[in-house]
Image (cartoon, rainbow, N blue to C red):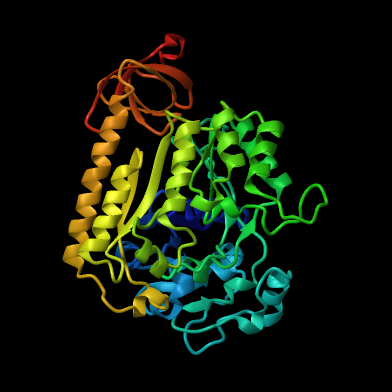
Length: 483
């Protein structure tokens, strides 16, 4: 029986795609290998959001080929979709399968679509066979697929997809026991209809599409049945969930993300729902009130900002102005005084002068963020920003990155400090050294619990002190202490 090794790169959406791939590989009769060195097939599910992501994927391909020269290597995901010829040219790559045909990757890996012949021979068993498995209307027909050597390449128009393919990221093994990951990710949306000038993601993931409501409920209930206490809802543009579906009440208006949340609260027993990231203008008053009012939704709001400079936001083709963003943050903080509020911020975008960076830094400083994800701009081939003038030297961009990371660390320290002497709801993650347990609070703070506790437990923790990057605490419910 052939063995496979799967490695995922990048965001939560990629992790969910990888979970679906694992299920499909198992259905094809392949068994999981713990290392690439012992696998017959190595599957690399790639990211392409930055040049560094591409570099990581290439390094992984070279490493897998070096460690296991006889293994077949299948490369899929966003990098494969964006630059299939570049990937196919790398030594050791057997197959390149883009996101457009990721639903066929497991069959390709199992040898059921392509022959074993190499360059010069037909790389496909039969056009009829491939048509038979890719014929649904929501997938790309054979005539739009590129088939090439030396690596067999299966790429089509990603915008032809109208349905979402994903699986929840389970941490349960065959015995049903909870594994190492206690906060599974449930991807309910994929693709994006925005056209930010710096972003390659719409080109590699296609149009926005949503998981159907009844399936979302079923997937969440499956996670509850597996024993999970908290799920993380994710998507490429999560706040756009449901806009591709007709309304539930027949009004003709599209469904909205708030309806999904209400349905999950009503029709599942999940203890906690965490929202991964929602664009600023999708934080409606209704959504803010729903998150603030439900004890089952984590008090955690992540709103991508990118820049606090109006001029830069316009060059980025973002759909809001700084004052719109600030108003959303104000409403969230008023509704949830103890909530975590985070943002993605980019530095070094083309045309970002010292003055414009200072506008962004000052804007960020004034807002009640509790953490930031700071990124240095990375030019992506084919995006409008790649051709913009006034590209920022990398050393300047890196220094701006450091400035914002220092600002974020100070904001996070002050936020953590405000909880010393108070209690927090936490979920236990895993035991650490010296008899303590790693946990995460409802409002996205790392907590180091005294003593050893079983993972996946909801506890109330009394915060006693601060660590370098976390809080020190003791659980009120000592009945949950591991024996």
